[in-house]
Image (cartoon, rainbow, N blue to C red):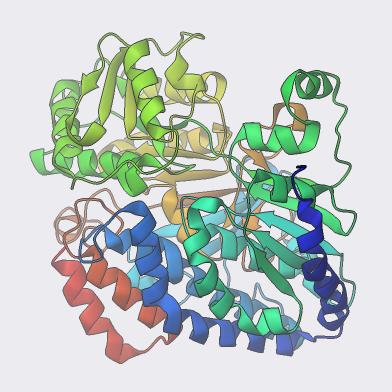
Length: 568
């Protein structure tokens, strides 16, 4: 018996979206902002169910501090974005400039920078010491930004068809965030095809998006790869956005098997539609040598462990390669602290399909692989210039961390590590730099030059690039310029609640030390150990309270958040 045609069951959903597009064109900016605020309330009401479903498929106890990851990278991230996007629509509806109040300045290479964090008083209090700028492409001026901010919401009646969003299976906010981005930045109605891993979240998200479903603006469907393919090739779908692997992107654009490889080599796509993608890669962290205390070594080791172990390593922007100076007197002490941090992080399952095979493959390819507790693996002694090194080209998407060494003091090591990251690693989604304040002052403009030279979509200095994902007004995506034949970490930018044009990258900065040590050493930062750190003991409580606060910001909620955060 032939397999049923998946398009048959999809026709009613696509027909509803055709009618919904006409309604969306007639929906003014104020009404769109009101829909977002209704979405915020519905998300807060469903937040516990959202987290419970995520913990179930990731096999985490809800009572574990690790469930804080699900609060923070799930409903908190989603609510924060919806609130920020509503504020942008309010400004546009009132004839105001959404950039009013934002600091706009120059950036290296003829770029323009917009400060997006801290954005308001709440940011200054809850993320004290952290900042973020969005940098434009070279040649884009402040006048260009003021003139074009708002993207497709400058002409809301000019809708652009139906977008297919192929949802991610790891971080639960990704799929619903991508839906909102398509609705607003692209002005398209949306069919969201869930990754089967997240099917348990379908009823939660249908409840959250109920007003959009009722108006025919969004449809949420489940199914296998055949369903996704049928939607991608359906004539009513005008554009596609996916989060996943390069293989998934290439299969959609060029097809599969030998024919697909030949089509990609000749750049003969089988799908003639706009396709944007966020695909991950091999992300580096550059540890600039300096003089660190024992507490600094421990804290930054935990920082790096978080960058790898958050969500059990199943993150597109998880750090995979650590660059250290072979001449750093504290190199061995830091490596010992890093092993301890990896060993002592709370145990958790490796749940993502294919992760166990990736771990085995990494260990098999490296004779000196260190098998740590909980399936974690540390690879040391890698040659940073070895073009055949699999850790530089294979995104493990698992708790495997590699270390490569380059010679030199800070001034020589930093540009050498930047060059190695740019030239030898696959992907351009995120890169990190860790540097102590004294060394930062000594280097002066060399640090800014290093940031400008890194070809990555998000760059964090003493702040994991994952914070860029959580910052609603920041852009998120690969460094621009990848051709579809060699898509690397993807193309296009999502999130971007200010609806800024011409984004090239997001640049984050954070404190080298947590409070209160930050204050003792002269850093103007009051943030204790961040709640996204895997060693944080109260991340679940803090994440729940942050989510409630994002839905209804108020002074009375701050003492409870601070009390929980300080115990972390």
